[in-house]
Image (cartoon, rainbow, N blue to C red):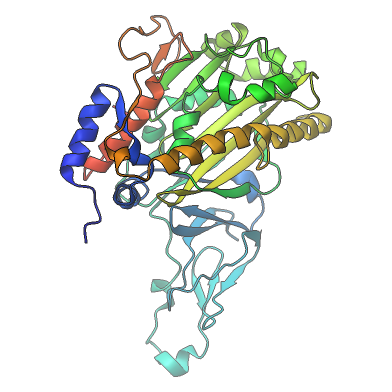
Length: 441
């Protein structure tokens, strides 16, 4: 039984992408999905958790890279450990709680017990069963993820021990991620557990949307604008945004004074102090990093919403992971983060703005997932393999900004698909190359 798509299909994909076209079938094809798990999720850096979720020794959360489950712990040694959630005796999951506090994890099948740093410390009847020297515990601890690294307080893991460092993988996107993390010298914290829900849609649609699709906002989210939940000057307010391609992800800089987002003046001034002079000049020009993504499945959004129709805007920041459960099923993970030293009243208002707009039942969230489910349904049939989608916005006529101060390539138009084409080209490169040194070329 063939588990990978034919090489001629991948070659047609490559040729199509060169002209800004993409087969609709990529959003449903089971053979492509099998190859994605093998060549993308088994060798790219995937976001798992924020350190504020495990602040104390013994704290843990359960996280996933596609089908693989990991216990992300703050060990008794104070370090961060990412442990594969499977007992070394029979493979039973040793942790069944999604988050909590534990110094030990005991397998409910035969009772093998592990420290929260992964070492095997207890085997019932060990001497009687294995003899004095028959079982070397040091060789049978929980498996650790081959690579674990952090950017600021963001924890990533990679299943490929030969993968390039996280710093190289992030590349120029680090310059832009500062816009999310530097609004306070105290840093960010996660509030509550991440919200999770399953949608009948392909995982790539989330990244495709967040990496720079400003074009959909005026149509898809028009009801939010008409209701006053998203009070903006006009529906096409993102038309003249600046879109940036930087490394394996990208972001759209909305052209809106930062103070209009609703941040307290003290936070705005702290933000400017924490940025580099070049970054601060962009803020002074009315630019801020709104939506963006990192290959393969991490997205982020810093946006405003109103808590009442026509009321003042309140900003919020969310991280999203599009965890694949199958070619047509995605588990959405959504974190709310806020500055640690923000006023309590701001934290509460920001959280409410997030829930109303991009929580699991948020108005704008429902808009997006409705689109993605419809696309996935359309991608199921025979005709979908021959139907090519148009990804040609900005392919020919758009010229890069010559004086952009940051890394990567910037374009003075929000309605373009430069970032989406870059995402799909990176995606195809991973699928077709047995070794992929880095996504930044």
